[in-house]
Length: 79
Image (cartoon, rainbow, N blue to C red):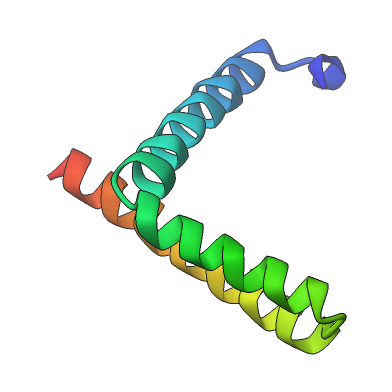
């Protein structure tokens, strides 16, 4: 990781990563707790049913919604 020879790049990537972690936690869990629990339940139910296609769809939908929540958080925070 740190072997790229560009300390400034490494530091900036660490800062971005920290912001993503904070935004993900705040938007994906705290403010959307009930929605996230429902999304996780859908994934687990599909896995328990051994329905790989449904599990994949539920996981993709969950990640797409997560991305949307994080993007909305950053748009709100920067405006």
